[in-house]
Image 1 (cartoon, rainbow, N blue to C red):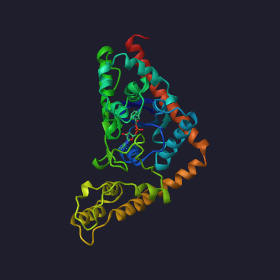
Image 2: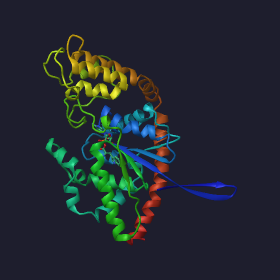
Image 3: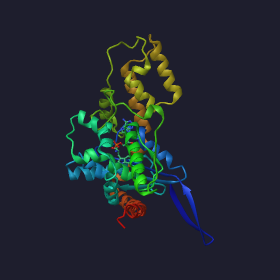
Length: 342
Ligand code: TYM
């Protein structure tokens, strides 16, 4: 639980409040899954009272990235993406994970109380292996660094997509192992999912949208490239007039991301009924392109402004790193003292 201290007529008032935290990997351009599953929640949650920490997980990216210039570029692009989509640095602390090296130290403390079996059960690790990723020790211990990220700021709520739920549960377990051994040091975090249609956004091939699978659609894609990418949405060869179940049609899942409930229901009804009035797949894809162009137009314009002002972005990240570092150092001291290193 975060603590807010402020002075009121010379008396310090301490108020308990919720701390929200989440992270995103700078491994390529952010896609619609990242937006609808996570970033949109992060931006909406800024309106809630409490503290908000969002970071760019550059240490995590090292488990797969071997190109320093590309990593630097991706970190900047990720920060710009958040700011363009509406993250307000006055309300939320935006920072680079590696600006708070205390998390790597906490990783060791947590690793020392965590059994191998917990990590061996990680779906995300098994899934990456199944997709041909060559594992290194960092990839295997990834959930411990992620637990340290969460626990280092006394986070209460971690807004994520469904694929990260198990990792947050592992952070709960690790907090429990450490607290069980040394007393109440870490706060138990809870995950928070977006609405049902958004927790696992499908990719162009119908599997979960993921940079690893190459089936992703960049949030700011537009024009011809957007049409080309959306054209790749997997469909079948049934004619438009044939009645279909809208829940089994991939372009309809994409329309569900963008359309208001009234318009979505109208499309679904026409698909279900079939006949001369029913839309074809090409028609659905065109509406996806149009809706996506429209929804992200203001953010696309803000992104252009931010690209032209890299100094501003660096400044926001640096200030964010200082705020986050101050918080993490408090938790670090508590953890070191508890386990006998002080
Ligand atoms: P990452 O970078 O893979 O994804 C960032 C966020 O986007 C969500 N997401 C999705 N949501 C719905 N549908 C999808 N297809 C989809 N793809 C991705 C993810 O669930 C995530 O919320 N390990 C994390 C980064 C991280 C982190 C943390 C997160 C490091 N430390 C601490 C929370 C707390 C990751 O790789 O996310």
